[in-house]
Length: 158
Image (cartoon, rainbow, N blue to C red; front, side):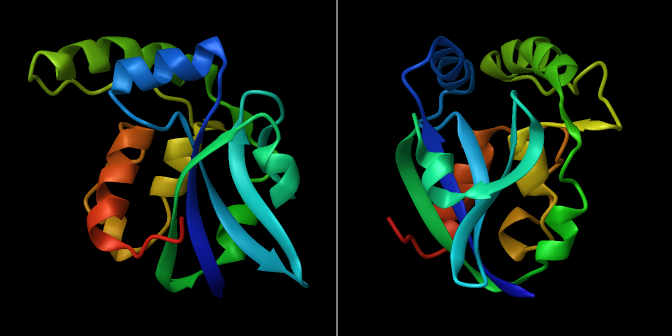
């Protein structure tokens, strides 16, 4: 168990803009920050490489920080490391489209399909067993859903 932060970012890229527009969010990407043997790292799910653990500096390359929140309860790094190597869930991104359209019209609609062997950044973070994310469906959550929970439940770092 170790201290962790939830890190929200965006970029200037088209995919980031689409995600932010579709989810009405300031952020398009989310990861979990840790310090391992004195080295700041981030575990995140990314389109290039899937779930990976990278140095914090590499994580921020090409990204713009939006917010960072301190997780006040212990988080298991081993739980996140177990997902390292899983592929990015492109199919689930496509499945989010009809669900987000329904959400825009005030309706709830679960994604029509999910993948058991692939993961999105928000899904990876939402699976953390912390009080702020209790009750969230990891397979339906967006970066905005997580950001909204963090804003009311966790202390901001930046």
